[in-house]
Amino acid sequence: MVVEAPHLRADARRNLERILDAARVVFAEEGLEASVADVAERAGVGTATIFRRFPAKDDLVAAMLERELTSILATARAAAENDNPAAAIGDFLEAAVASFVEDRLFCEASGGNLFARPRLQALTGELTETLQTLLKRAQKAGAIRKDVVAEDLGFLLGAIGQAGLRLEKTAPGAWRRYVAIVLDGLRPEGAHPLTRKPPTPQQLRESKASAPPTAARTIKRGAGKPKTEAEAG
Image (tube, rainbow, N blue to C red; front, side):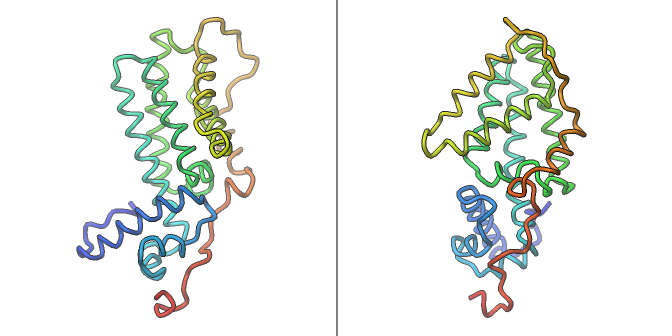
């Protein structure tokens, strides 16, 4: 895992934590456009210090995505332990959309090339399995219509999250209205047969691969990498 560092000296571990904490704030606020130099300034270290641990900007971004996915997975697993399946899936959907809205990096990078990395693929797979468990429990309890699949929920989460992030500055919290509307639409009462089959996992992967550059690009080494240690300050 990118962020594991049990072998580091105490001072090196402290530096790593400062880098990760700073990166989380900077990327959450500025998204993919944030530079390593921005992170270094906030962490109070030179950019060379960051590049010694993360050879490319991609690696630092992947570490942030790993942290966020791990947090969302923990939320999903906690929801799976809830005795009320209907409340559990509602709580999870709201928490997951909040992750998109509160973390611009996670929203912008979701589904992009970095998610092809083994660790992120593994976390995504675990999250999908847990989401399927949540969905099946809610369907068995009669709280969710039976023709909904996990891929449907992922699509809806992304749609609300992307739109919610754009709306957050002008109408803070408005995304919660749309989570409520979606939850109503997922209930079996008054449901009509769906006219289209859900997209397959393969179709979803292919759609993400052909997404606009801002969502699916691979981030290059980028601005902020010094040529020498002296230039790092």
